[in-house]
Image (cartoon, rainbow, N blue to C red; front, side, top):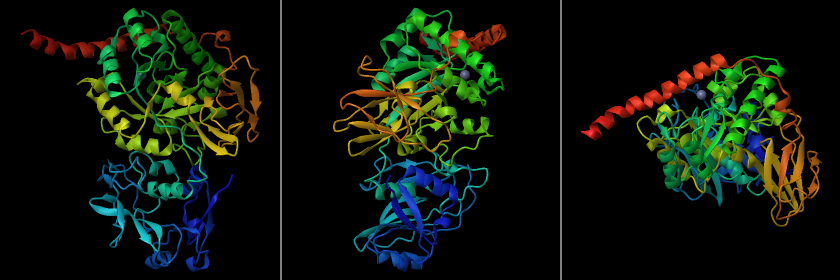
Length: 548
Ligand SMILES: [Zn+2]
């Protein structure tokens, strides 16, 4: 695939290697050394990292795009709250950023960009310009003061490009996307889902979450909400609760929350067979729940307490789970022995064993603008999570978060499984549609003018193979094996499915039981009773006031 050369002054090595690796994966660029700016071709795109004002003067005379960082020294990263970054409503700025004020962790020693008349300031911090665009000799220079990050041995580039800390890399990524617009991959559409862990179908509410009211708000304020339900809770089903899910699939869905919901249940070390038995039981219970209720439950699991052990992803994929959803911080914490790729946390999903995807989620808060904007900017789905206690004072939190997310553009609110099935990048090359899947099963509508589909080789070490199925007409031939980089004929106007060859190869019905769940059941009933009692207790004073 064609890549755009970017001349780095003084040298490509002045970009930290992890940052270099990330940028070449997120954008179609390659970096070349440019020790002396005067010696390069006049029209080459320049990334100027020396911080030298003389270098900036040289850029002024050139007719090509360039990016100049004015500050070189970096203070240590902090996770203390700092001043927000204020973006101006300039039409040349990405629409996701325009006019927004986004909270940012503290940026000690950040200086201002030295602007001059005619510069368009794009972002400020503490009212000082930190990102500006200068029109010089008919060509634009991006000026930023935030130095590029130098991740330490325990950090990743993700630590500098997330919803809470982003200004050291966002402007450069914005610039590289801009200069490679003609050849870059197309990101998936904006997608989002609000999620709550623990609710079940025992009653049309769970703790502080009254389902009917949640649906009313979801319709009014446009959002989808998915509950991660515990398979052990698949008993004592309330017909009214089931009805609410059946009648409102566009706003309400269910996914799977572990199996017994014991402490860090999926984070415990077990044999491969032990993991498979546990997850097999979870699936058995979910299938039974589907048969009892007629509902469809997403094959996406949320590990209790976000704990995930080595071996679980492979077992889940084999059993037919299409993904898990946890925060990137938990994923990194529990699977800390892994050599994660430099792009950790920056792609539409994190691919683990055999390409099993982890859908990143973030905290559901009213002011979710940072995580929402950064996820959208990176092409990641916006998945926000909380527990019922978060809405103890009312459901306004849901409306407030949905309002922030809906302000980003045309958001497709979907269940986590539907999000995963649309989780891929595309690029057209003649009549071939290239695909980079970030899921174990995706549905690809074939647009007009396309006669072949090819899966790009990905950067993960996983050995990924896909089978292609015609989803529009299942009878038209069986699955075709897809080798990376080998185009397969497809028909415009149809939808094809790419299904991981490792998905669902193990029959959960053939697996033995992982052991007795009686203790877990007792604990689960107590937890549920506590959650429901908390909501009842909180409601009682209001009822007394109303009756007076
Ligand atoms: Zn839970």
